[in-house]
Image (cartoon, rainbow, N blue to C red; front, side):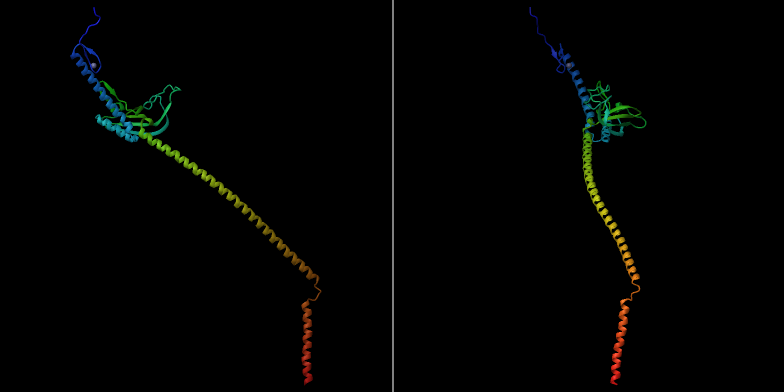
Length: 286
Ligand SMILES: [Zn+2]
């Protein structure tokens, strides 16, 4: 007697399940196909949502893309990021960049922070309806599949449509490019300033040397002026002494007749004699 026998069976081409009848296999195939379509639709929507962060060239732009996405799902919403500031170390206790690691236990072998922007996000729908939660605005559904996450948009505590938001820079490649170019520009600027400062320092040294030389000249000039001053005082003293000596000599020789008087006296005698000679001859001729 044989251990095996041949039977007729039908296989679902999607999941590989085996059925006795063709109808049962076909029913499974239809069900599997529908499940697959549901999954495909969901993945497509997820990808579309993931594209938003990849397309964003700024956080304002990201807000606009979020609004467009919500509108496509027939949800009117306004998204606004407020008071965003860059932080080099955003704590990854509850969320992290896509592909990163959260670390609320602060384990040493895992990262404890990532760079990014932190601030507030405001979700507003029209006044009658009040504020949206992010989960309401960006949810996607396909069959039993449902997701409200927006890749890259990490909301924290809040309420009334306002939430703390963490936007890790690694999740926004186009914005990251800008941040990197700014930090490159900043370091280039710092380098240029340092170079400029070095030049200034060198120039300052040159000027200080020149000032030292000028001071030397000024000091020499001062010395010259002092010497000239001394010289003129000595000259004054010399003149005074000379005058004093001359006066003393004159006082001593007071009894002597000055030469001029002697000359005058002789001149008078000579001219008298000459007159006598002239007049006397004239008298003899007459
Ligand atoms: Zn199947």
